Length: 300
Image 1 (tube, rainbow, N blue to C red):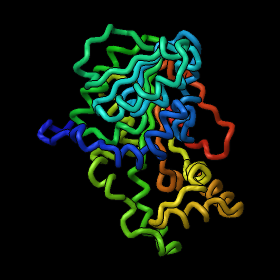
Image 2 (cartoon, one colour):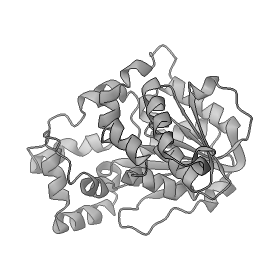
Image 3 (cartoon, rainbow, N blue to C red):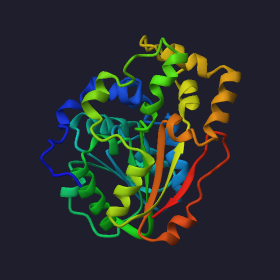
Image 4 (spheres, rainbow, N blue to C red):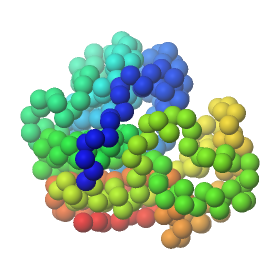
């Protein structure tokens, strides 16, 4: 594990520009919609969680609160934690458009979960969605240790992170066929915020070292993302790439390729569940109904 001499990414850089780039749509749109629109990769994580009414759910790095609101609508007691004043402010404003039957189940906390007092074994599900890549190892290990303490014996973490670090090993080869792609796939935000991009191996290793049993999978999420953004104009090459991915022949080729060992270098989304016992992991049912679902690994 690395030492803690690497400075954490400060909360002040998570400003309105970053918020809009990360989640899509303006703050006003989110507030007016009360967070009802869920991005595909987040919906996938929610499906993996197999939520039930009455569960206690914690969302780390909750952002504007879309996961928290979703869980509350299902009847879960949902808590969101984030250290960005901007996103917590948006979340609280969105709550005004929700009924008391929902808001009574919602709590937002501004701060660092590792420094907040909470009862041990309080949560059935804990979400870490698009946050792992923003934390140095020393932060990540401290966070995992905290979440181990907060997780119920029969509960589990649900993790999503991107990009898959190994995809960059194949990016140069992909550009031979798609030369109009950007020379550097990382945008300006990623260069600043993505301090700890993961692979299946590194994600599994860090969870194991903190005492978790885990299951890690790589999934091909580009196709769902292409559909999600089909009416969005980026102006940086993604428009052309997403249009290509919406071609039926290309979609078929992508799915076929993703079903081979090349998936480890061609898929961009990493999902994991982590629990205190191997028995709980063995009971986690990943829904395999769509063709992009691949590469389920039990790891310890």
